[in-house]
Length: 155
Image (tube, rainbow, N blue to C red; front, side, top):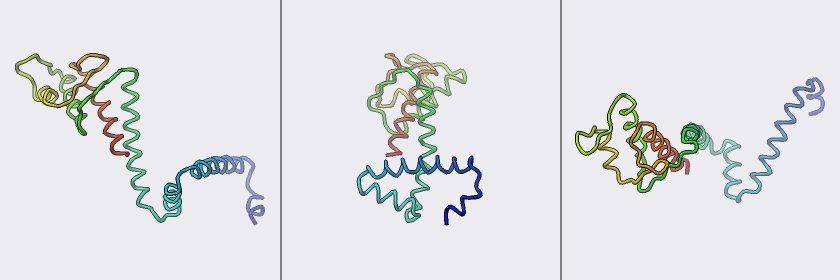
């Protein structure tokens, strides 16, 4: 019986088991509020019938961690974007790296390839109400667009 098995377990360990059971119970109650198709998916996942989903979950975990870190870096800055496409974050990352390594953001002539790439995007972007033209603001745009890309991948 279960009591015979637990008789020799010290109270600290029993308390840890109880706390985990309590958390699992709360999770089960929450899942029971989900629509039936989500409850069935959780059942298949936990029973091992849909093990391929675990691979997706672990891959998404990295995407979510990266997006969370990017969002922390943005902090209280206001980044407004209209017309950006998936992958545009890389263009802004490259532009920020260019400026961080000593490159110069120029006016009309002799623009670096990274600046031309930013100029050629169809997006209208501001950081705290101004057009990004320094490494810090370009990095904020890259982070913001990276978060948007992560959200698209997770959905």
